[in-house]
Image 1: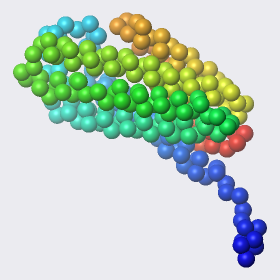
Image 2: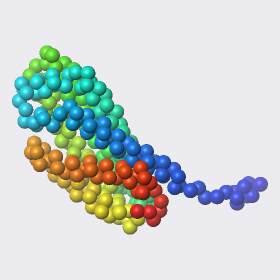
Image 3: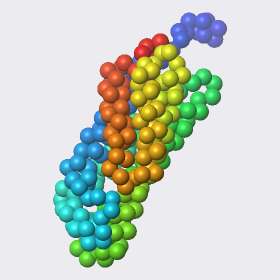
Image 4: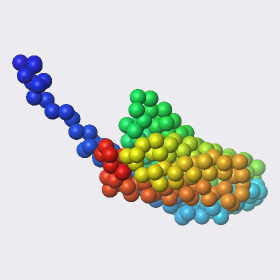
Length: 231
């Protein structure tokens, strides 16, 4: 009876669950872009230069101590969880292309976790919450801590991008232009950390987030890492 049942079993088709994971991963990538970057732009975070002094830091934190600032803080925390989901989902999708020892996708997942942890350091949130009577030097410390955590996250997202690019370039089943884009953006982000106070340091990050957007759309459409042999 057991032999008869086993002989009629059909091999499982992995395409459907991979397509589901691809679409979820693509959706979370776009959610990260809209929520995290959208909150940053809406709050005009980029208007506060990295070199702001103590008084400027106090002014900045008071400017985001309002209802919209509080909502943006919440949205960013949620968006970073979406970023974690994107990173882990991408690692799982790329794992099949590495063979017996998927070390690059494993490092990709680890880098994704580190990037989210860097973003969850809430020094700016704490300083804004106490901005009414915060000491200027404490405000400056919180401001610098937030900026340095942001700059350190470039190394993590750069490693994520680099590992993804290396996996993509290792197989003919995935589009190499997307792999080279990831490698260049990844290396650029890691090097940018060395000059993090310069405006040009933000350029590799822009390239990375555009790559995330393009990749997310491909994932949502089921055009990336779903079927074997599909590009």
